[in-house]
Length: 192
View 1 (cartoon, one colour):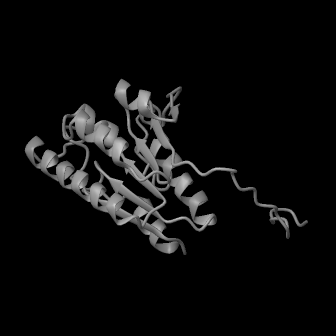
View 2: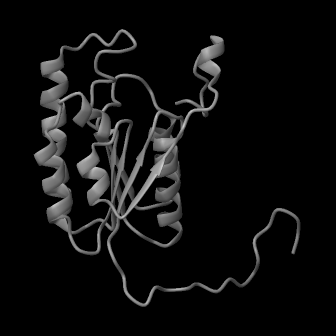
């Protein structure tokens, strides 16, 4: 095998029983959305269909928008937000953020009902819940009503304890050090 290449023959393993998982990626460190996007990339390799609904992103460019378009994968990405509510000089009122988040909840129910997707990523939904843009009961209803074999991935800081309790897998991304604490601006391809 050449350096940097993949093996010619790779055995694929299949689970004895498929099970749709609920995965929560939370914490105050960098990499929650990036981890979910990695799952989308991995799912692409398995020929799975993915939908990503972004709750907070939508007012500033994010590299994943064009990155997903360049991939030859069945990944739909929908940015429903108006940016991060209440930070980074975001000009939109809370009511407008809430209206967009409520539209995203309706969209998620449509996507689940369509049975078109194997994985549904709810990017920054934990933040939306913490900011009361969505209600706890709405998020728990999504978890209860997901199709049996669909995987749900919920990202964002401050995951609610009831969401954590309902999940199959929970990962916490912890900040140890971050460049912005040294007054280094966010960098394309790394931070957005």
